[in-house]
Length: 244
Figure 1 (tube, rainbow, N blue to C red):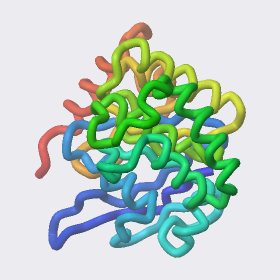
Figure 2: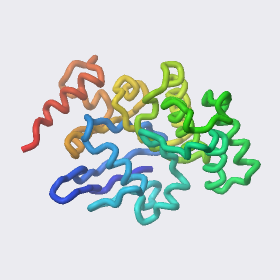
Figure 3: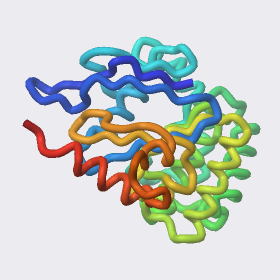
Figure 4: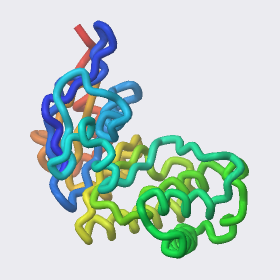
């Protein structure tokens, strides 16, 4: 469903993302992990057609994410790390507007907005201006915007950052249910315990390069069979070492 083909991004002599080749299958929850500054968000922005690759390309369901950016967005729901909304639109208005932008009639968009706001625990804030939303509320509203058109692919950057424990659990359960129905989920996170619970495979990017990918068992390699993802992550990034 997602195919990175020698995708890279450079700024002058600095390689923010080195040639990246990776595939993510339909219905898979794939965790994209890495330290701060590793290139995760740059990769996601190329995947979403926000940044132009320096070389290579990334495909979603066979569509080029740069050349076919508008069509790709019909099939993809995107949640950035820090969602930004018009301050003086209400939560209901924002979500209804996004649904209408995806082609739904006003009445159907309103129905979808009402349902998602209720399901994500925002029913008491539907008439509140976005400027008054907490970080956790903005994250839930951003997730609702990503889900409102029933996308085939979800691209999520730190989806539970800022959520309280119960809301975080509810979001994870919702995402796993979506994956079980065939939705492909590409998720970037620093929360390795979440990635360990949710992801069938992970990729680890370090200093712009993909240094490992596979299931947790595959990444453990010769390490202890009961190693946590955190232990595996620290070992792999330590072994990747300092740049030459």
